[in-house]
Length: 374
Image (cartoon, rainbow, N blue to C red; front, side, top):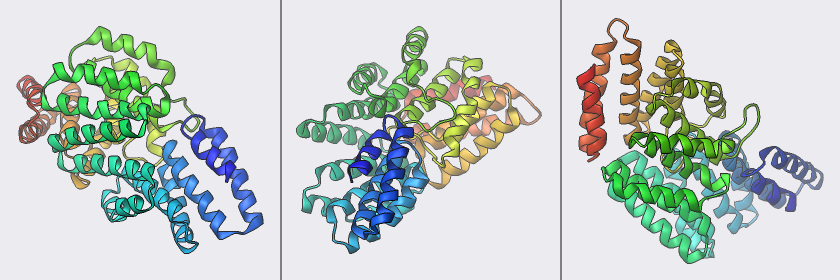
């Protein structure tokens, strides 16, 4: 149990060491052949692999853990596994399954007093519902609920995400002056990579879109050491920071720098994750498309964007439906092959209508400006 708990926490900081502890815990479980213990350890693995964005393996562990935890009467462990299996499914882009799994989870968590599971489940559920609806009022309500809950429980680092959601609601809603201090507050509160990467990436992208170029580049330079390292498992927060970084560099037309991250984005995508961040839910396929386009790898970029369009439309992920269309149109405009301009105009027209429908006026202005220049 101690090995499994330590292994799950280390996944958020040092996944390779966490893996070693998981392996040792599993070896002991097989020797003891105890279903209650096996369910506990697999539940911790479900949680831990969420922390290192290996959500397919985390979900597999959850599928083993849940029937064992239920059959041995471990209701506390069941609620924890339900919470993080739900989170893994969201990162895998399996929204319908996540919705079904989440039914009655909060009621069960509240009945036995598992407040951390209530908090973890509700914030992911509300974020997923925002992705599916694009409702900015609901996003703002998520930020306010999250801030209140985390503050009451004394979980200060988590409030960085609360401010991140509040900043995102204002950024997408066009109130960029109000968004700036919220993003800054969120990034400063969430210091460790396990907490911070989500808010760091969101803030960096905001600075880029808002035209604060020097500030964005200086911020990236100061935080560069927190990006994921190639060829090894990394904390989820580091992957989230990477996705925001590539988006920011693409906006700033720092194409060589964005393109240099393309192999690392492919590593993130190879984990099976569809999104690296439950804060803003950027699709890794779209981020990969932008990185490939910045490097002039047009065929790769087109495949990524087409996959991202299919994902965003089918999930659905309303904001990413529009961001993918705008990013894809930018790639087509830059490539300028036969028929690219016509296709770009169609995509930008769809993005413009969508931004207006979701009441994202400044993003609509960006799409309109791009449309006039095609």
